[in-house]
Image (tube, rainbow, N blue to C red; front, side, top):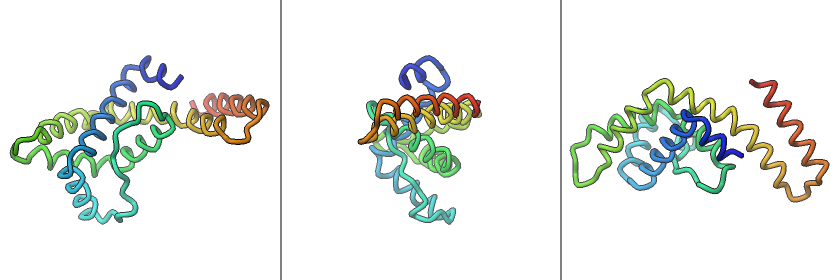
Length: 157
């Protein structure tokens, strides 16, 4: 169901792809990770409060919410990191070009709005998934979890 929601809403689909690209850049580039750590340190962010930016897992939807939250809470740090990386002279890699493109897209207000929209959808679904996958869940418990999710979603919209 989450996949269908992602594909049906173009801004959410696009921002999830953007988040995937960002995570891919961070996981493939040590320069990106070290720059991010230095920026976080210089902004007095404790090393334990900084969360890694990682690519989205295509099969584990339960990690989507934590990935989105990690980005949203560190939005300014990520933008600073990308801005700094985009100004690095080319040294045989495409890190600067990728960082520049991501920076341009992430600076758009619609990007942050779409991420917050995705949180509204994926948050309750993640809670439901966790409940349904509980080791000792009963059918009646599953039905109640679905009902509570529907009520929660209706109240929060």
